[in-house]
Image (cartoon, rainbow, N blue to C red):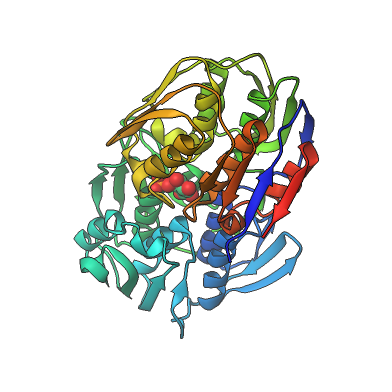
Length: 431
Ligand code: S3P
């Protein structure tokens, strides 16, 4: 049976938080990239959530040995990747399936990747088509667009690929495949998508170079890479739910600690600042990428905003940003965001359905939407199995009293979300 959370109205709060969930994108990459070394990778603060545990258990099926002590893990790669006896289950994780498609298409063996009912309707041809062009043998339902995806791994040709979409999953899949090609490959995107893959692979010693003309040059591996040695920072996308909670609740302040400050990940905080919130970034260290604290203070009612640039830098935060837009003075517009339609749910329709239930007026476009700021009303909202939609409406509940149906999906990325929410409000719980 689906669970429902009922949230109460809230007065101001002060949150100092060092246990926002570890970064999901980086944790996936830790599990997968450790297989490119011949030595044990040491990963502290790995995200123990359904999505990233799926990547880790696939690494085990491919022969890795994992030693785990809480969220600290050691991954010892096999000498030679194993052809798995079973299907590889990516659960709800788009990152796991797309990165493993690229990774495995150049590995000798037969691999079958699938996922849950939500993942099985998400498009895979964005990685399958360019990989087929360089000789990959990949099939699946709808001629290879839908999982289950079957890969007969083989040596691939190099490529020069000017990607029509700004997607870190596509970029990463192709970079991983090209590491096993027989000569250098080149990849380009019109706007830099999150660049954890480039940074981490470079840190491991791979020849992944961004050239002055914007092309990424990838040199095939001649020998195994150095192992990863990393403490995963907190996830700015997870922290953003509490940034919005702070920006819409009078007399509130939050400090989100030890979070990635990578510019491709914190754009939503910049937009929230443009809407009027008081936001400060304090960089403290650099481990593969800049890491530090983000301080957010309530600063009066927010104002409407137009978001139509650098969409890849805030695509995951648009559900939560939409809650801020719904409470703002004036109209907000999101455009050039058709990628929202193929996330864990069709986020344009799930966000707008939820907001309409909360009494907010909206307009839908094929590549975005308009939100007329107003007063959120108490309502019952369905997440449609989408973790970010569930958490966004839980935050809306802080001002309006919202019942969020189907919240189990939150475990895919942020298992302690409600623990942190409990710190700042009273929660009633119903089944
Ligand atoms: C991710 C990339 C993004 C993002 C997803 C995680 C990644 O997807 O939405 O949550 O880890 O590479 P796209 O690259 O498809 O935009």
